[in-house]
Length: 76
Image 1 (cartoon, rainbow, N blue to C red):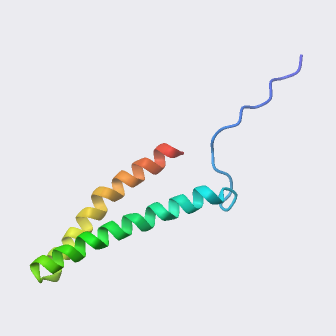
Image 2 (image 1 turned 180 degrees about the vertical axis):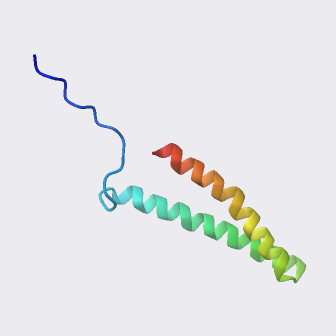
Image 3 (image 1 turned 180 degrees about the horizontal axis):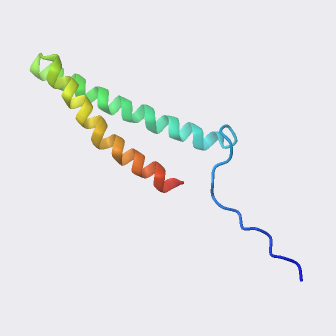
């Protein structure tokens, strides 16, 4: 009796084999950086102080970065 062939998993291969997925992941990271920078710049513009803008940037990065991290883990 022949053995069943192994089932294929949805695991990404070596980097560069799935160009579309690599581009989408890069786009998500650039989008995250754009949103964080926009929030930080807006806070600096409204308060005329750099430190609150840095805090706003870091808080946005922490919240959205964790969400993006969870999304990327779920995609694997």
